[in-house]
Image: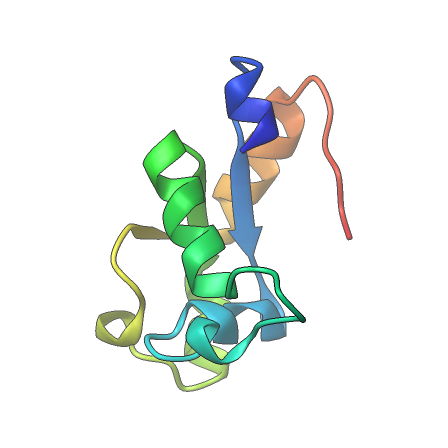
Length: 94
């Protein structure tokens, strides 16, 4: 959201086990201390224009149906991640 506030395009690409947090009902379960839940943060990110993308193969590998994902998440292939990285001025990974 900070990147968007600075007029920088921002994409969060969920892959492997990270896909589980964009399954409907899961992000609400993740909250640390007095911080908002992950669901609230994801909703805020979407509202500010951050794109949330999910690797279709990772979802398939974990048995997550595309209809089970939260609204606002775009399902894409692995080639999209490669394109994003190649076109980016910078990228971060945690």
